[in-house]
Length: 95
Image (cartoon, rainbow, N blue to C red; front, side, top):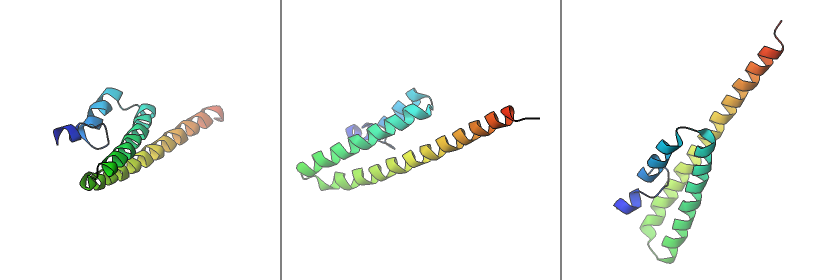
């Protein structure tokens, strides 16, 4: 169970370690979430071949969590981009 917990998949501890190293950089966090989704899919295939179905359900749930986290990051990026555009327009078109 310890080895499973350090797999770098959101929200396991392996992801938390990498997340601390990233220092809240949105671009790296997004790339790492894509990596996390890829690892989840690979592990689902491996456990399916090995006929360990219990872990497949856990990994499907973790995959869902990773996708939801990725959606949150996209929303946060859009908000930041909107704020930047607003500030630029405010600066350029001030009276």
